[in-house]
Length: 61
Picture 1 (cartoon, rainbow, N blue to C red):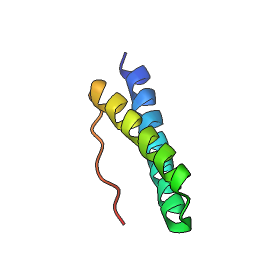
Picture 2: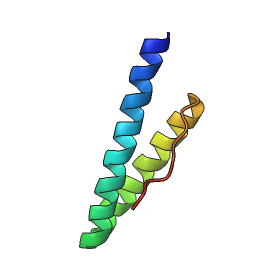
Picture 3: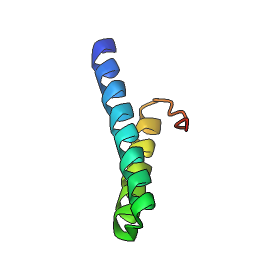
Picture 4: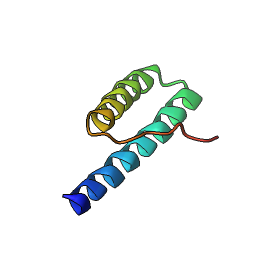
């Protein structure tokens, strides 16, 4: 189960980082709808990570 979990962890962390980048771009361009969509997606991904014991560290600027 280790390798499967490693793949899951890498995938969920990649998706979180991509969502954070898209969210930042949405903020920067003033796209309020996309901001809302990406915030909800980010919350779902972080919750999923937490449910599976994956630690999510804040993105560094």
